[in-house]
Every structure is written in structure tokens, then in C-alpha cells.
Image (cartoon, rainbow, N blue to C red):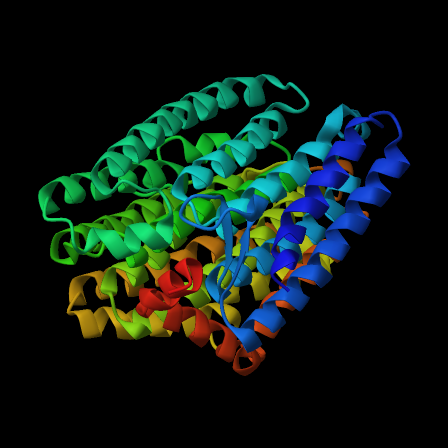
Amino acid sequence: MTNMLIYPLLIPLIAGVVLLFAPGKLKFQRTLSLLSSALLIVVNIIILIKVNKIGITTLELGGWQPPFGIVLVGDLFALILVTVTSIVSFPILLYSVYSVGADREKHYFHSFFLFLITGVSGAFLTGDIFNLFVFFEVLLISSYALIVLGGTKVQLRESFKYVLVNVVSSALFVVAVAYLYGVAGTLNMAQLGERIGSIESSPILTVIAILFLIVFGLKGALFPLYFWLPASYAAPPPAIAALFGALLTKVGIYSIFRTYTLIFTHDSGFTHQFLAILSGVTMLAGVIGAIAHSDIKKILIYNVIVAVGFILFGTATLTEAGYTGAVYYLIHDIVIKAALFLIIGAVIAAAGTSNLKEMGGLIKHHPLLGWLFFTATLALAGVPPLSGFFGKLLLIQGGIEAGYYWIVGILMLSSLLVLYSMIRIFLNGFFGEVKLPHISQHGSTKGLVFPCALLVAVSVFMGLGAESLNPYVMNAVDTLLNPDYYIDAVLKE
């Protein structure tokens, strides 16, 4: 069973390497990447079910036991995210076949797509904080290639900022890791969790905790470090933007969640309160951007930032309800953001523009697309019984239990404004007056609607079938609330 933990990394990695040697064989590239993505879903679900039954599993690479060797840790929190990653990557890949364009696909699109999935899955599964850095670099290098693929002027301009910010972030990451190793003498996450409580130099650890928050906040788009995200995510094609919006910020969020529940718990009165304040301001900043823009891509991208605030607020509450809400909302947001990015891409293809002021009347020729967007909007806003409702309700409960009443107020206000920002697109874009000529207004959405429907169906299932997901989420939260479970499973104590 433990050897299965390597499969979420090996499957996309091997497929990506094979595809490097067949750049011109488009049919082969599409077939192999789709088959490997489908296989990855099946394997990850099998691993998830088994781990839920037998508990946390580990894989010691090279036979070296932790903390001396590299270890992969399969706890339910990590495996839920790995599984959801594979589930959303398949429809995005299917969508890309009809939207990215043959020229981009021939230039190693599928290889870099699969390498990015490898990096994301590795970041979730690694039990060593230096290898977290390594997997970050794997996914970032893949994202650098994807964001410039096609070489348009906008892509090249925004990719420069994107690469620069992430290079700075990676340099800070190495500095933070060096300081942490200097203080604790190890980089194994379980051993760090064991040692941190006994180290007397608490002020230094607090500084290191904030340094890691800056690093992961840059990658996860926490206020005020999200400045690079809106323009960068608007530059690439919709399929690549969906991959970025659904997964890349979530790796930063996961890293904060993992380190702030397992390692940096020594001064929670300061670190977690600081995180709570930043999460509240992130909600406000994101929602202001969402309601201020008329470009539908930018509206959705700013809603990505709002979700970052929601999830990290749950982390900051240090309550069972807050953690449960954060985990529910995290997996919900991965799915629904992927769905909405793809739907928005199809809307732009149909309307011939991304400017809300220049589109209208789409519902007549694209009714299914319109109602998929409406359903996804309700889920995003947390309207019951769709997937966003349960996570948001528990976040409110956790915030009240922790005494963060004003942040709970911001969360509720932000939810209403998120709904307003998206309903604007629905009413004006689908039901508004037709403003472009027929030939421009009703472009082709061939092959684009089915992947969107798949993701919306997953979101609806997560809401209506929340009871079937609850045992997995609760077991994941139990490990987060009791880090000794993680520590004992890794160190075999």
C-alpha cells in the first residue's frame, strides 16, 4: 500500500517525459495525456479510500527512514487535495484540446501540463519542507512555460512579472528554510512539529513563521502580496488560466495550512491572529476588485483572491469548525474555480469579447452555457445546498467561536458582493441587449461546454452528496487538530 504513494507523481511524470519525445504527434499527445489523467483519478481515489480505512501511510524513498531520508506522507488532508487535483485536471485537459490551439499543443503543452500536476501533487504529499521547495520549483517552471506558450505580447509582458515575483519568492523560501534548519536542526515536517515546542528561542521562531507566511502568501495571493496575480492570470488562454486559478494559489494555501497547524503553533496568539487579520483584508481587497471591473476575466480572478481570504481565515481560527470549513471550502473552490474559468473562456469565445459592456443576449444561442454559469455562480456564493454552502457556514461558526466577529462580518459581506459581481455577468452577458453583430456575438463553443458541465456536476455532487464526503473531511481535520497523529505516523513512535 505504501508504495502506491509514488503513483500520483510517477504517472504524470512518466507520461510528460514520453510526450517530450513526440512533439509533432498531436493525436498521440492528446490521447496519452488524457489517458494518464484518467488513470490518475482512478489511482488517487483508490489510495484515498484505503488511507481512510488504515490511517496515515508513509513512503520512505531509497529506504532511508525519516528524518534522514525523503519521505512522502499520505494523510487524508494531502490525499483529498491530490485527488481533487486529478479530478479537475482531466476536464481542463479535455477543454484545452478544443481551445488552446494546435501550435501551442505541439510546443510541449501536454508535457508541461503533466509536469505541473506532478509538482502540485508532490507539494501536497511531501513530508520534508526542503522538498516542498523542490516541488514548488517543479510546478513553477512548468507554469513559466505554460504562461508564455503562444508568445503573444500580453503573455510575454505579464510572464516577466510572474517569473520575477516567483524568483524572489523562491529566494526567500531558501532563506526561510536555512533559518529554520539553523534553529531546529531538521527539515522533516514531523520532526519539526516535535521539536519546535521544546525550543526556547520563541521570538526567532515567530520571525521565521512570519517569513514563511510571506513566502507562501506570495505564492497563495494573500494581501498585500497578490498584486501580481490579476494581470498574470488574465494573460494565458482559458484552459491554462483555469489550471492556475484552480491549483497554483491552493498550493500556497496548503503550505500555510500545513505549517501553521503542524510546525508554527508555539505563538498562535500572535501568528494566527496576524493571519486572521490578513485574511479579512484579503477578502475585502478581492471583492473590491471584483465589483470594480467590467472585464469578466478580471472579475473572476479577483474572486480567486476572495477565496484565499476565506480559506486562510478558517486556518487562523484554530477551531474544529473553522478547520472543517476551510477544508470543505478549499476543495470546493478548486472545483468551482476550474469550472468558472472554463465557462468564462467559453463565454468569451461565444461573445467575441471579455468586456461585459460589449456583450449581451448570449442565452438565446447558448442556453446550456448560461445555466451552467448560473449554477456555478450560486455554488461560488455559497447558496444552499450547493458545494460552497457547507464550508462557508462552518467558517462563520469557527470565526464566531474564535471571537473574530468583525471578520465574520467581512466574510458575509464579501459573499454577497461575490454573488453580485457574478450575477452582473449573468444578467448583462446572457440576458442583456445584443451589442455585437451576429457573426461576432455567436461564436463557436464546440467541445467547450462538456468539460464545463463535468466540473459543475462535480460541484453539485459535493453539495448534494456532502454526507458521503464528510467522513474523509472529518478524518483529515482530526489529523490537523492533533498533529501528534502525523508526527507518530512519520517518525514511527
